[in-house]
Amino acid sequence: MTLYEPVIGLEVHAEMLTRSKMFCSCAVVDNTEAPPNTATCPVCLGMPGVLPTLNAEAVEMGLRVGLALGCTIPPFNQFARKNYFYPDLPRGYQISQYEYPLAINGFLDIDLPDGGTRRIRVRRAHLEEDTGKLTHTGDGASLVDLNRAGVPLLEIVSEPDLRSAEEAEAYARQLRSILQYLGVNHGDMSRGVLRFEANVSVRPAGSDELRTRTEIKNLNSIRGMVRAIQKEVERQIHLWESGQGVRQATLGWDDDRGQLIIQRTKESASDYRYFPEPDLPLLQISPEHVAEVRQGLPELPAARRDRFCRDLGLNRADAAILTAEQAVADYYEAALAAGGAPQPVANFLIGEIFRLMNADALGRDAIGTIKVTPEALAELLRLAQEGAINLNTAKRVLDILYAEGGDPARIVAERGLAQVTDEDAIRAAVDSVLAENPAEVEAYLAGSEKVAKFLMGQVMRALRGKGQPQAVQEALDEALAARRS
Image (tube, rainbow, N blue to C red):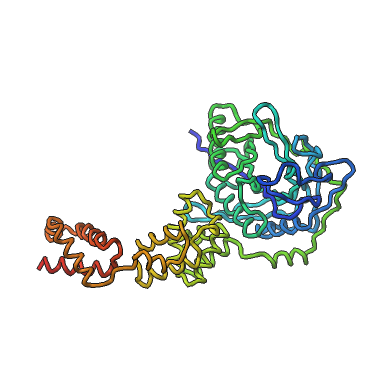
């Protein structure tokens, strides 16, 4: 049986966080909140005789992304008309870039599951305008909202360098993170501001052949993208194995049903009849301006991850988790600035706070909204480090902070959660437990070392989880040694 490998390229469409649309002064609004068709004007409605005006802020944002991806910025670029009719495209054509895009020949290094990295080439990043939004009512009618029509869009096109759905996921997540760090896109895919299209083919493993590909359109979640790619790879392998071959086509993805839908045979570039946009001049970008934009780039996720490893002693896996979302990285550094130690803060953030957020179905980018402030987390871990509470109690206090907010020290004091360090109280608890469990004591004395863990747990239970673990262990060892002698 032939072994196949996927050949995948991604097209990422990112709405940019500009104040106004790409070619007019209409405000960019939240489609989930603004009434339909209220952020429109004759330009974005495609009325006859109106002229587009280029949004300089969108150009700046596009340059930042291109430079962050290591792209070359050509000295000039040009807009073109991409002709096709669709109800949510008022002009009957989209103003985009084709032959002369904003940025070319970049790359993104992705982390692989085995701990390695792989460089994925970025072919181009170009500017265009978004379309409107259709809502299908289910009774054969469709409603169009043109608030989104004309919103600045950056399309980032990779080369077909991805070899699995998992690599596509890593690329998508790292690119999303870069866009957030640059302030270009907030990454909330539920609102449609970041969308993926996957070009997928398969070929015999080890071959350099590029076979017929299909394009899966408008994937609005990374999870859905991964499932769609996996399903399409399976479908294409079956087609090749059965001797049918693959036809070039555009596919849709029904995430609820887990099904691919063949929408139409795929258009080629000639079908769009690209030609230069006559109402917009060539855009010239000087090397001096490129250097100025490059100088203003922030610390990006990979650099922040490496700094966390180098300066804070974190392992790469923890550092990657903490820097994937800018909000999480900012929260972490705020906790360190409040006096938290790097590894304990990382452990509690990744293990405990994320657990609580997951239970509430909160994305990690919502960390700034929770009731546990970075200062409270640092104070809680200081109490544990100083021995005022033990680790289990710290987790109990964190649960309270997450639900109610407040000050960790006050919660410990008011609820009587302070750690028991009194030697007499600990010895009394040890003696009581040993007296209540004679069979287990005899088993330990006969050589069953594992019973010691049970007895330790019983003593901690008797102290209501507040015993200082080291002091309890020492008292228990001493009492058992006395019985052995």
